[in-house]
Length: 165
Image 1 (spheres, rainbow, N blue to C red):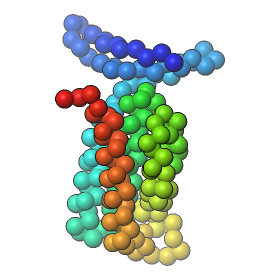
Image 2: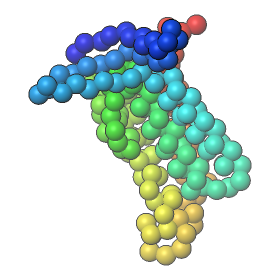
Image 3: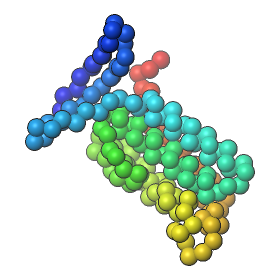
Image 4: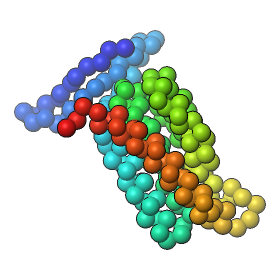
C-alpha cells in the first residue's frame, strides 16, 4: 500500500486536492481512494440532526432510518480517514472492516446489528404483511437508534478530526 499527497492544478488554480490516496495494485489494477472523511462526517451529522428533528414530530420509522444513515456515513468517514473505501450499506460489514484497522470499533458491533435493521423496513411497506412501514416502529426504537448512532458518530468524528485545530 502506498499513500500519496497529491495536488492537481489547472490553469494555475488548485482544482482538486487529495489529502490521501490509497493505491493497491492487484492484477495490474489500481484502487484510488479520495479522502472525503470530513465531508462524510458532516453529512453524518446532518442525518443525525434530521433524526433529532423527526423525533420531535413522532415519525419513528424515519428517525430510525436517519439514525442508520448517520451511523453508515460515520463509519465510512472513519474508513475513508484510514484510506479505505467500502461500498456497502451494511453497518456490520463496515464495523468489521474498521476493526481490522482500529480495535475501538469492536464496541460498536451490537450497535451496527441493531441499526442495520432500520435500513430497508423503515421505508418500505412491503417489508411487512400489511400497513405502512411507519406503523411498525416505536418511540423506544427511535430513542435507541439515535443513541446508538450518536455513539458511533462521536467516535468517528474524533478519528476524522484528530490532529485538526
